[in-house]
Length: 115
Length: 114
Image (cartoon, rainbow over all chains, first blue to last red):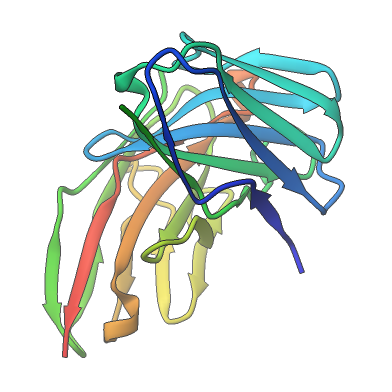
């Protein structure tokens, strides 16, 4: 069965802290994605990766960085958390190709609160 | 650029009512279209998809037809159940854009009352 797991379901951090969100997929997928989900805005792409050590900026990369050292793991890093980064963060993966025919598989999400 | 517009929610229906959630898109190429569903406390999961004009995607009693002439992909179900209460997202992926990106709509919350 397809599985994408995220390290935490809920996280509370202080302003200025460095925050790591981890995502692991067990499907040998090439592509991995980080989104944030906010009411009224839907899903917005932060970063994606189409191969190990490869990354590309999405629509809202400011304030975030990512790391993909192994194929199955894609980390999202908030270098200095701010209150406007309070959100639901969703990780997804897909098999290969340019995504047109590829289903994205999502993790359960991490709800981050920055105080 | 590419975009997806879906109807504002929330949509509240009684059990066994007919459901339509509207979705229209703009794209430069020939996109594939998707409906994803997010149940409370969970991530998104694929509900159905269509990859070319006039294709009909269907799953769990839901269906949507890819209409190129009206640039639409409306989601329908003949008889909703309480268990269908969730947030529904329309999305597209456009290979002509040269990226791996999906474009998601803002989501429509459905609440079904017993």
